[in-house]
Length: 208
Image (tube, rainbow, N blue to C red):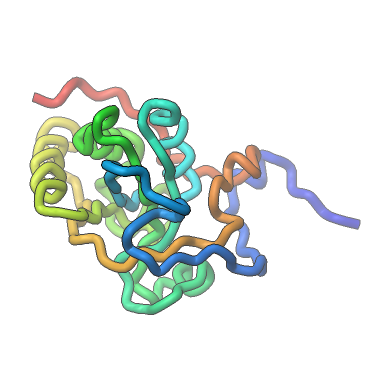
């Protein structure tokens, strides 16, 4: 007989599954789309458990210029990392979300400001109850303009919103690896699944 945890318990624990990994992409040119729309740009961020990050970005920007949001791994030094390996903390990767968007409808600035509203960037190697370097806060930039914007916004939010406590790292985006298929759209497929309690939209005044 199959055992199913009640929804409220599901939301407290992240399952480790033995599901087969599919759809891995070692291509740094996209986030899993079969083709990237002409003029599309990418933003890659890490903010703890990637299920909730992907979900909240889709909820906020879906139908408003967001082409795709994929969860995966970045920032490590192991090829073809698996979820179990990343969770061990030994690969150096962060759980991350890569967003493909229409820059005529969404600006990179909007995506980064939202990043600083939807998670807690003040806890090193931790997000809520999830502890480990894979849950670190990070912005992985794809060009010099993104880096400039990311650093500018980080300085602003650090002063105006987070009282000088931001520990978010800003690094050039390296190799991206798609996470296993069962992680993609996880909370759409498992609406009672685990959600990090630090993933919610904070109400802050506009940046000066």
